[in-house]
Image (cartoon, rainbow, N blue to C red; front, side):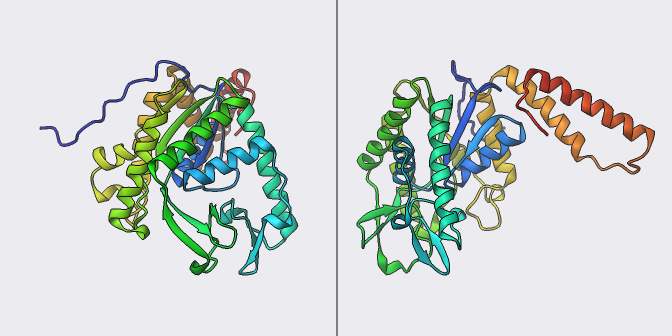
Length: 315
C-alpha cells in the first residue's frame, strides 16, 4: 500500500550545481535553510546580504540597488525603538549606531553586486504576496520594523505585479551575468497572521507568477512548497509553532533539491565533507590517547586531500 504520493522530479539536464559553482540565495527564511545546508557541505554560497526578504518587490529592489550600486545615506534610514533601520532590509541589519547601519547597508550592496556578477546560480525563495506600503513615502517596504501599523497600508500583489517584478529580477541579473541560472522556489512557511485563506491566496499568486517566467531560458522552478504540502502532508513535519518546517522536513526537501540540482560528482564530495564534519564534531573519551591522535591525523589527511582539489574549502 502506498501511503504517500511522490512529486515526479528528474535531474536537471544542465547547469547543475557543483563545487565550482557560486550560489547566491535570496528571499524568505527557507532560503536560509537551504543556504545553511550548502554552507555545511562547503559549497561556495552566500545568503541574504540584507537579511531575510519576504516578498518579490523587496528582492527586486535589492537587485536593482546592487545593479545601480546605490549609496545609502542618512535620508534612507529611520529611527524607531532606539535603533536605526532601513525599510529595504531586515531588522537583523538594524543598529543603534546609524553610521554602522549605513556601513552595513553599503557593504551589502557592494557584496550583492559582486555576487551577481560572479554567480552561476541564483536561488530566489518567495514567501508572500502581501506587502506593506509606507504611507508617508508611498513605497512598499521590505520590513516595517515594528513602526506603528497606522503608518502603513497592507495590500496584496497581483499575479501581474509579481510577474513583472520577477521578469525585472531575471533581466537585471542577466544584464551583468549572461550565463547565470535563476531557480525560483516558494517558501513552505505558512504566513497565517495574514489569515488562512489569505495565505493560500498569497502562495497561489506567487506560484502563478513564477510559472509565467520559469519556462524561459536559464530559469527554473523547484517545488519546495508542493513537496511540503503534498508529500509531507502532516503536522509532525512542522515546528511547534505549526508554521515553519521542522528539521526533518528541511532535510527531506534538501534531499529532493540535491537529487534535481546537485551533480553526481558533487554529491560524492558532499559525503566526504559530511564525514569530515562528523569527525570534527566527535568528542573523545581521552583527547591525549594515542588512538585519538591517530584519528586526528587521519582526519587531517582527509582534509588535506580535499583541499588539494578544492582550496577554498576550510573547516
